[in-house]
Every structure is written in C-alpha cells, then in structure tokens.
Image (cartoon, rainbow, N blue to C red):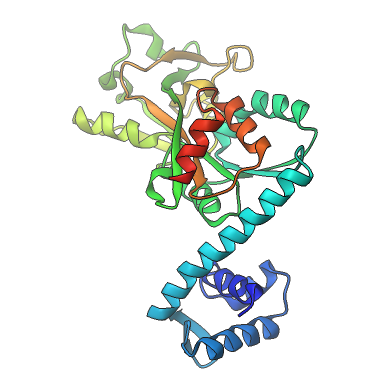
Length: 306
C-alpha cells in the first residue's frame, strides 16, 4: 500500500467519481491513476469503487470505510509535514483562506495587511465561494481556515470558533420615500422591492426568519452574493437594500443612505472553521488572533485537538 494510492482514491471520491477530473487535479495520467487504484483493490482484496464497465458508479461499503481511514492517514501525513516546516522555516510557507466576498472585501483587508507586514515570506491564497464551498475546502484540506457566517456549522470535521457578531442596515438613495417616515419596521420594509443576499450567503437566514416570524412576505426582486452588486442595483432604483452593516461605508457609498436595522433582525455570528485534529503553523495562530483577538493560541489549540 502506497500513500499515493490513498491520495488517488481520495481525489476520485472528491471528484464525484470522475477519474479524468481527479487525474487532472493530481497532475497524473488517467491510465496510471486507474491502474494504481486497481492494484490497491487487489492488495486489499476488496472493491473500493462500484463499476459499470470502465466507469465508476459508486463507492462500496468497504470502500467507504477505507476512504474514511485514508482521509485520516493523509491528514496525519500533512500534519507531519507541517511540524517539519514549522521547525525548519518558522516564518515562511503558505496560508490558504476560504471565505465569502463580504469578509474578503470589508473585514479582512486590514487583517491581511497587518499579517503580511509581520510575515512577508508567507504566501497568502484567498479562495472565495459560498459558505458550503468554503466549509468544504477547509474540511477537505484545500484551505487552512474557513471564515463564514452560514453553513459552516454543518460540517462535523470542522472545529468552529465564534469570531464576532454583526447585524444589518437598510440602504436606499438619499431622496427615497422610505426616509420620509418614522422608525424603520419590518412592515415598512416589506412595502418596497428588496435587493439582498442570496439565500446561502451573509446571514440571509436571519432575514428570512424575521419576516416569517412577523407573518410577512418580503418582495425580494434581486439577490446577489456580492455586497457591491446589491449597492449598485439599489443606486439604480431597483429597490431598497438589506445589507451587512460592515459593507456600508459613508465615504465610499455617498450615493446611498443607510439606517441601522439591528432592532429588526437577530445578530449573526461569523465563525472560523478549522479541520479537526490539524497541526497549525505558528503564523496560522497569528492570523486568527489578528482577525479575532479573543482567540489566542491556547484557546485555538485546545479546540482543534478535542
């Protein structure tokens, strides 16, 4: 049994049994990859994958058990490499962060700036996606840490640590009739077309819950994954916007007015997700502490090792 064979079967499973895609991801030849998987199955005397002709169609019961163990073995191999790198080159390496547009655009810039000044020899890789994609990247090892608000708690392989709470604001052009009334209410907001986040992004579930609890059906005319897109279409008059408060800047967004809506919606919590049992380089601890100062090294290490 070879580590490379374990990597092959793991990547095939991750690629939804698409051998060509798995081979491309590993920079390997497809025939060689298929041959190595066959050799592993012959050695173990079980089929890991179900087949129809030459096509893989599923994972066998023993295959599921083998894949789970292979994931643990490869994770520990990665940890060994991280330990070696930490002691041989403490201040150099790479850090992959998976996060949403809102976090990357409005929360992380100052953190990244401070981090790169402290660790100029660490290469940063920023991966953006949906909360589910982000959590999956961290759980699979494709990213070192995930930063998101939604979905991250659905992954048992991730340790979740709360970072900060935030809420929303309502935005509209300064001359919009919304501003002619008194205090903002859900009833008032529901009278207008609404532009807000896609259902999987940026605390959208809290918005839905608030309207549902009030027995209201908001007229959501456009959803987006990008806060800047929401602001653009609100400026064009498509509707009023429901936006994460940190995504509104009075200086940059002069064509819009914002009012706090924290009294209408429950707070959302942004969390960091780290693969359970991971060995973290020293600079990973530093990045997390810059992002969320209450998460010191001892707290993070205790959570990850549980």
